[in-house]
Length: 539
Image (cartoon, rainbow, N blue to C red; front, side):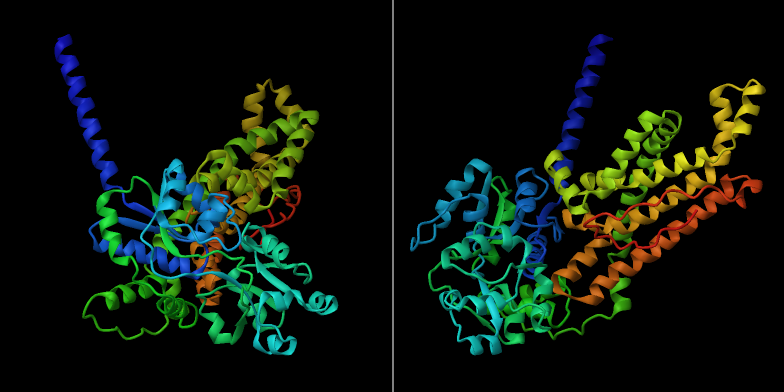
């Protein structure tokens, strides 16, 4: 019998290993992208090229900035993403090239990337360098054509210029700090803007100087003057696919047709199709792959979809499920911890002061800052850090409303319970909890509605949800795309509030429903909150 059992165990272990191997083989490759138009388009090109080559792949759009994408790549959460050689050298490898030095070859880059388990492969065929741009009328008025000429402006004139620069450009080694030092630029303190909004701000006269990518479609549309980098500060930013060094050979073979196929004119045209014509990223990428095929005719441009079509696009169900998972999971976790903490805070005044201070402090942390901390702590992006952040934000209304509800129970009822000989747990369950339940459920409702809005921020770290649409719309400054995410999020908040109101009617005894419970303490606004929820229901 022991021999038989050992044989069965070996068979089961073998089957488990085979199943695990098949599951790993079936797992699709994860293609990432940053939060700007070109990265979305290139990520979609890579995904579709992989699928056409018979390799399953998914595109995780708009995961964040260079640091987040690089960490996700090194931790194995994504397998590849579009990147630029200058960014790899300056930001990832922290290498400074001497002035006038030739750019590193791909072989040199891969030698430097090898210790990180990464490789840069498949140069796509175009250079998308950083630059600064002015309105043409301002450039003519100031007589500025180069960055050196900009630096030579009189101090008063330079100080009157209002720079509006992207967040990443403001802190990158190859961005504003180094550029300002190299040229001695003296404009006023820059205003931080999302790259997708900078062109609109420039066109509306809110800023005068912005950072651009040389393949941006809006440059020609707005008639901007791109200032020449006459001292050669910016390195070449040749587009490549940055990937894990052990990417399977079939995936490399499927991506090979993209090598050298995209010149600057083609990239500008694809960016324009998204930003100006309002076409979806996937459609633009598919059109390029069709026309890039030998003998293929250019497909007619499809009309931009309307708001209703964007709201009810095929991805709505998937995004709703992701959003609900984030909200439901975080609120349930917060109830599991917040209610006991509220009971403890009510019964132990000294401990309660520390509990309330802690949960109050969590609410003041900016959403994106907390996400960045959790990503660094967990070493991963995606669902888990977003879930934990939402859980922490949901604690305050639940803890405070638990305390407020218990504080509103008349002391006479507690005394009556003790006089009847009820044990503390029985008295809490039968006397205190029913009295406090309306206020407690109001706190849960508040936490849930707030988290529906705050969960949109999860899209910045690849957790999905309706925020994906908002972030994509922000990247291309498309109000309809943003509304396609914001409208379902608002409707979801109303639905959640209605469901919790129904739950309250089912759980709260009829005599207590109309009772005016104690008002819960207000929930302070968080600095940096980027969610869409603004309404906070009263109990």
